Amino acid sequence: MKLAPPSSSPWLDPATYWASLDAATAELDPPFGVLSVEALAHNAHDMLARANGTTIRVASKSVRVRGVVDAVLALPGYAGVLAYTLPEALWLADSVADVVVGYPTAHRAALRSLATSKKLASRVTLMVDSVEHLDLIDSVLTAGKREPIRVAIELDAAWQSRVLGYLGVHRSPVRTVEQATALARAIVARPGFELVGMMAYESQVAGVVNRPKGKPLLARTVDYVQKNSTAELRERRGAVVDAVRQIADLEFVNGGGTGSLERTAADPSVTEIAAGSGLFGPHLFDDYSHFSPAPAASFALTVVRKPKPTMATLLGGGWIASGPPAADRSPRLAWPEGLDYVRREGAGEVQSPVTGIAAAALTVGDRVWLRHTKAGELSEHLDEFVLVEGGRIVGTVPTYRGEGKAFL
Image (cartoon, rainbow, N blue to C red; front, top):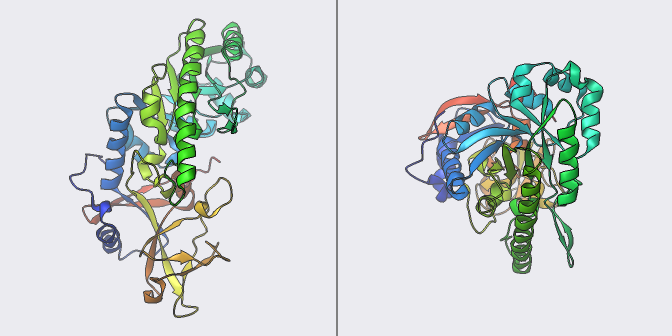
């Protein structure tokens, strides 16, 4: 799969776009997933433009398709993978030379495999935020009995607002220059470890839409949070990175995500940005003011019932995304337009009744197209994606699940 910049943007005309995908896959039986190669290519190149020259490390949890990861890494401007578990990182590191695990690990078998392989130990970097992580690694194999382990320190990137409180995800306990340098000195002084990087994920900027539909007051609040959080983190992250660089020769400083590419790229202390969700363009990313990803990934379900003339029932549909339970965690009914879930049932495990203007026209055997809320989680429900390009199927690509892998 080659991701050349597309010459057109058919997704801007929903009727044409979904009709084209429907026609291309007419012989397939749902449920199945589709990747529009043109839309995927558009998203990949748009992300590079937004990053403005800062390298993008592919966040694999937001893809979970090796063929897509490989195709994106073939583009200049992308380099390395941010994995989400150590077993996944070891699997990817067989062919990818630079894999950072974005979360601490306590997987002893995987640690043993990493520590006893010169190739893997040179390609994989672990994330730590406490001395206890070092203790755990040493408990598996002590320094004299293993390869040196590459590690990176994660910095808490949340904004602690005097008015709004703690804004961001609860990750690392390391927040200040003093905390970061204390951990850095402990790593450098400890045999068998190499401090090679730092990471700080500003989720309150990268993962929160700033133009939620019908909520102007919330939009202004989010703008306020993101502006002030970005300023605070730029100053604090810069000070921490400068201090840690006096202790260790850092190879990378990772930050940001799909929603913050521009802001994170403007931080001089950051050398690379982790991003992946923007490649697939899930509906979680529809409501940003500064970018509009194409709906590259979608899936189709079949109408199997007509409980009443104004209603249609889909087989399946309950592919609910992680996060706070709410309506926006359900797949979005993308096409035909004018469909809604039944409020008291929602997207169900084996059936999803839908209503709305378009429901009356649906008959048994018809298809409905949906988009998942989050990017990589869709791959956990599919063995493969069908690749559609130029209005026809050009191949398939297996997901992690299709390759027999379930890492988390």
